[in-house]
Image 1 (cartoon, one colour):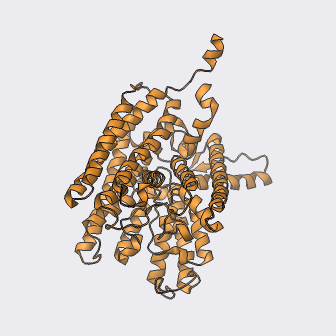
Image 2 (cartoon, rainbow, N blue to C red; image 1 turned 30 degrees about the horizontal axis):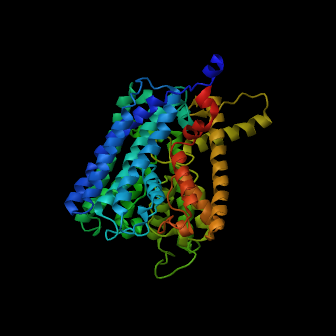
Length: 520
C-alpha cells in the first residue's frame, strides 16, 4: 500500500507556482494606481479603482503567503505560466464588474467581464463592450482596458525569451542556444537583465509613439488625437492589442495617424531581440534574419494584392455613404490595404475601415493572414512566421530527398542546422493549432444553433481564428466595428479559453490536462 500511495503522489510543487503567481498579482496591483489617478482627475469611478486596488493587493499577498520554493522546476514553470495569465485575467475583471454595477453596462455580467479582461491581457482585442464611449464608460475604465494590453504584451515577450526556452515548449526551441535566432544568451548573460533590456525597448517604442501621435495633434494633422488618445493608442499598438477608446477604431483619425501607426505595428510584430542588436551597433541583424525578411516579404505581397483589388474596385463588395469608394485612389487603396494587412498579420486588430465591406477575395486573404502571426519574440500571436519558414524549408527538403533519397539535407536557418526535434515540435504545434481551430469552429456553430443565434460559417471561423490567434476582429457580426456580445455564454467561455491557450502557445496549458504531468 505504501508503494502504491508513493507512486500516486503529486510530482508538482503547486505551492511554488501559486506563490509566484501571488507575487505577480501583488505587483499588478500597483498598475491600478494609474487608472485610479485618472479617475481622480475626471471625478468618475474613483471608488471602483480604489476597491479594485485593495482587492488585488489582498489576493496577491494571500497567494504569496503559500511560501514558494525559490527553485522553480520545469513542472512548476508550466503551472506558473498558465496560472499567471488566468489569475491575472480573473483579477482584471474586478474594475469592469464594479464599474458596471447598476449601470446596465454589458460588462456587469461576470462572463462578459472575464472575456474583456482575458482579451486585454492576452492582447486579443475582441470586445464585449456594446457601446464604446465616454458617456457609457469612464476615462479611467477605458484606460484600464488599454493598460491591460500593454502589460500583457510585454509579459509575453519576456515569457517567450526568458521562460519558455527554459521549459522547451511551443516555438521556444528556436530561441535556445542550439537553434538559430536571437536567444537569451546573445542578449545578456542573465534572464533578469534580458527582461530589463526588453522592457526598455518596449517602453521606448511606446513613449516614442505617444510623443509622435500627440505631435500630430499639436501640428494640426490629427485634431482628435488629444493626449488621452495618444497615450491610449500607444499602449495598445506595441502589445499588438487593438483596443481603442474610439468605437470606429483608427478609422476615427486622420490618414497621418494611420500612416504613423503602421511602422509601430510592424515593429511590434518583429522579434524584439533584433531591435536590441540594432540599437547596440548591429543593425545588419535585421536584414540578415531569415524570419524578419520573410515577415516583411509576406506583408509586401499581401498588401500589393489587396491594394490592387481595392484600386480596381474588385476589393469592395458594396459602396455606400458609410463606405466611400476607393476605386482609382492610389493612396487610399495602399493605406487601407497596408494598414489592415499589417494589423491582421501582427494580430494587432486595429482597423482603419470596416473590412467586412470588402469583397470575398480580399476577405479571404485577411482570413489567411490571421494564421500567419508575428515573429518569435514579438508581441504577436497566431502560428508565427518562424514556424511557417521552417515548415516551408522542411517541405522543400522532403521534395529534394524524394528525388535524391541518398542525400543528407538538413534544414538550415541563417546557415545553422535546425534540430530535428524542433522541427517535429513545430509540426506538432501547427497540427494541434489547426485541429483546435476546426473543432472549436464546429462547437461555435453548434452552440449558436442551439440557442437560435444565426451566424454564417465565415463569421464562426473568423471568430475562432481571431480568438485562438489573439487577432481580435473577424468578419460580419464580429467585424472590426462590431463586438462578440451576441454569442451565447457557453461560446464566450470557449473563446475566453481559446484566447488563454492561444496566447501561451497552447502546450503550456494543455500539458496541465495530462495525468503524466501530475503523477509520473
